Length: 232
Length: 220
Image (cartoon, rainbow over all chains, first blue to last red):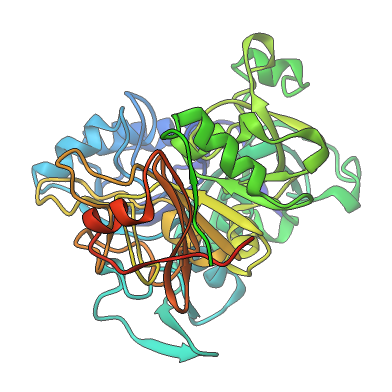
């Protein structure tokens, strides 16, 4: 059964230097902003972070990078109009970048959670991103071998949890949440509300509680979320 | 064998309308960021096309404005969008499995270059100081049943973007099936590049500027 943490700070307190941390979200949708801020306050450094992007603007992951707490980032799309903190760190040679096609990134995370030792995929075959990699021709088509991405922690955001750790998400904010929850040794989830066990319809549970280690309730901060009943 | 030679060079919106009209009714389609997004403006309701966005949704509706903006409902370009009746949400691994597994009928992408054998270059200029970013480009290029490229046929320096072999870093090998440009529509076939129609130019004129053997296409 998951632990229910009283605050974001306590939820992330166990994260040590040099950990590998999966961080959910695609752009701001599903980004566990309060957990990332707590990680920033907590001081852990030398992190390897896995996220689709490399931070936006002056918030969340972008600030972790600005403070040089991220040694390496594994992502598909670091360069954006407002990724100035990553851009500066990268140009200064102060962050390592592993660039992965988005679907391969997702499948590598999924593979880790599913206990798969990697997979062959056509995505990226014959491109500079997979130079030197093991390849195989399967049914006449070139495939490249990709390895699973295991992690120490996952920080994700969901809409609602029950006390058994079952999660439901909201719209496109689901993105990496379910696969990251399964791929990490410990999954820390911020939710808008926690309901009693039994209150979520089992047919609608997206992430079963077996994948969830810690839950923390963060009250909704946006009108859209509040309107959809995220606030308690 | 025939290339339809039509009046004038197509504008940006006319090109988008042409791509839209070529998409078969009932298709599942992913429209890339930028010029391909315009195609959605010209899909007719009776085509019943379902749009996929790779961040995890089928049944994407038009861009959201005003009170309809919801930060949890965005497209792959991180633009707020709306949902249509029959929409569904799924996680990233499912979304890309859907793509890689060949379930999408058509993907429309922009390009820097396309080779005569359908190699695509659209993610990286290869400039030494550029910060690379690939996103879902490689997955889209290799996954859909048909990959349509929308691009200008000639670069600013006048050189052809349809080339014998791409000089920019590749996105995918042998993946492009059609190229829609303001000057002509090209079909990439096992027998080479065929010109389906031209706009304000002729097959003979194009051949003088394009370093790839061009043939007329079979009649549609």
